[in-house]
Amino acid sequence: MAPTKTVLRALAGETLPTPPIWMMRQAGRYLPEYKATRAQAGDFLSLCYNPELAAEVTLQPIRRYGFDAAILFADILLLPQALGADLWFVTGEGPRLSTIQTQGDFDKLGPVGDIDATLSPIYETIRILRGELPADTTLIGFAGAPWTVATYMIAGRGTPDQGPAHALMQENTPLFEALLARITAGTIEYLAKQIEAGAEVIKIFDSWAGSLKGDAFHKYALEPAREITVALKARYPHIPIIGFPREAGDNYIGFAKATGVDCVALDNSVSADWAVQHVQVDGCVQGNLASRHMVTGGQALVDETRAIVKAFSGGPHIFNLGHGITPDADPDNVQRMIDAVRDK
Ligand code: CP3
Image (cartoon, rainbow, N blue to C red; front, side, top):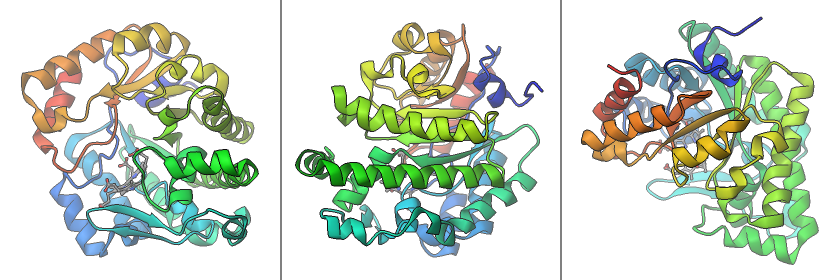
């Protein structure tokens, strides 16, 4: 049966008169209602693991703006926690995890079969959302790509250049590859459960793909994305998958064909005109307005939004930012962007 929701139609390869729109981190600290619910939950992780409140913050940007897609409220670092890593968030700084530097550290991780003991509240959030979302809103589930997740598990925190992960890759390749394999297997299991619970689309976030060059990109970004996609497609052939190898540059070319993903999400370091030529030729693309426009606003926001819509108008396109919206964004600028996309 042909899909009727606009996001699913674009993902099926249809060129629509108006691109569907949603926004990375659309449930976030730029919204006062998010901050209120987060305060009610106590802290970020308690919010992620509280199905009622996680569903509530997922719905907030849908109510306020009528986005065409909702993205499950959770985090890519919940999977490492479910695999046995310690995880906590330091306010104003970001995530902290127990580190993986040695075989002994790796051996302390648990088996993939145990992840649901931690992650079952996430599946419950999805079930609640499927009951509450408007009929034309698509629900997106997600996970981090193995490389990006590994960079946090190895270093125990975010790093500017992913140095510790690159070092382990060089110095103990078997351990690095064993970790990647464990994350890949866990990710397949986690995403399959999200689909069973009601996720209609899956997005794989490889935020640090840009720091992998040449053969390393092929082995550690492209290959795991292909493995996850093949495994999910074997079980759920009708579920579209969006790949986001952020800042991949020329490695965006051919990524959809090589991995089997239905759509490639673009960051704003590539121009829309370039991406039309090199990426959209293979199917649906998503992106790629610079998120700073949500802070700066003005005519530049409207002009740039319209230019992106126009550039991609000859093929399947889902409008989005090039990366997540930031806490200092003005909620009114989000409405201006939506109005510009929908030509109001
Ligand atoms: O897009 C969405 O709204 C869905 C939910 C979602 C979150 N994180 C919620 C979140 C998604 C899809 C993510 C993905 C994620 N998480 C990525 C990949 C995408 C990207 O941004 O590159 C990464 C690298 C993470 C890890 C992570 N989570 C970091 C580094 C941080 C701290 C930085 C920050 O923005 O504070 C988080 C926290 C986080 N994840 C917040 C949200 C809404 C902010 C937490 C808060 O409320 O204090």
